[in-house]
Length: 640
Image 1 (cartoon, rainbow, N blue to C red):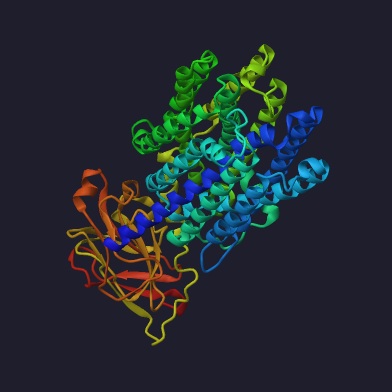
Image 2: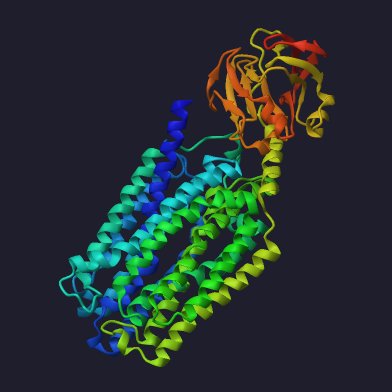
């Protein structure tokens, strides 16, 4: 158990470091790359050509991002259909991380002066490199965040994993803001009014690219994907079926529309903050103060998510966060040149962002099971590809708006705060505050009216899936009697009072819908293997286990009724899926007082799930001990 805890901690820390490097890369691409393009790539002395080239690059990024959006679902489907010795995700995370890291370093250069010697050839090369980088980054991005539903089926456990990851990503995204100007100025040959030069920006890009790739390798080495029958599909989703999978999941679609509007507005304001410090306050170096504060406060905001979600519910956390962001935008609007007010407004605007990210990520993750129950097919990476797709769409809109705003407001290469006119100030404020506020509020209204999937509904969905998919436990196992004996002895797996299956309070079991069997009111909290065989199914909540005997008997042992809602509290599992066990091996131990305290029935239900099997009870009532023969299992296919 100690080794298992250490393995879980290693996995979480590796995943968190992966998120750290991943969001360093994304913050650089979405926020600071456009700053490099507008303020450093083209010299102001080139006059109208300067603005024209900035507009071209902004337009190329905008178009390519939207073209790539159509590819993302197919990227998710490709990952879902991947099967390697390293799992579904790791090859894409590491490979995509390497290629995207190399290309982003190249993009933070003038490509040997090609931007001025042959500007239009530069644009062609830029477009090819950018779309290549974006596609491989998407493979890494989709693969990385798609790992969460593969690690756990439980909403609370997913929240813990995502919280670790978001702490890492919060630090990564903000450390970029802390180090960007110090690194740029350290390696620049010319200060350029505190804005640095191309050499400094390339050094900054190398640091980000290297960290991003190393973190991807750490994810590959340090995480472990858990296998489960619930993750297996009998059919793969075809390319033609990709859009059908996405569009028929109504909760996924409404949440996607909400998040698309929200993230576009949020990223516009975030991307323009460095412009505010550079061209309104007139001191870009002060931006490091804001990034440092956000990095620290953001960690506490992320850590606060699980208790807040538990106390207020995810929906209410979302609404509270939006209210704080709107207040921040109003304060930002009147902050003027006051550094203290600007930092206060920017910090207030940032604090809710990791909370909203986690709310959206958890609902999208839970929509995997929502779609699985509704349509009978599980699509993890395809479903999870929606969030990075929307982030990139928001980034595309943000880059377009920021590039145009920089040109309209006169905030381009060589300009300083004193050069910005009153008209420039007005345009800047409208685009930094007014437009984002409208997008965020529209998204919030859609969330309020249409998004209903919450923690309670998800727990019910998982419980129903366990019952529905549990029926297939024995479908791929031949019921064979090698010795010609048509009956198998079936021992009790636990000590207690045996009862007929029809007496249990769960109708799915009592009706025989799940299979024939019996129930035991336990006097002890230990489940033992009733026969020698293989662990076929395990559940993250540890309240049930599926076994297949060496002779082909498929059995589901379910501890309690409603205990899925305990999410593993009070349960210890000693075996893993695929493990061989011998008759009498300890499988699961549970703490009965914990079940009783939670208000659930602790009856242990045992059913044989083979449709061609018949169970005849030898003992219908009274006390039994584990190992006692209580039933015989016979095969109807053999004429019994």
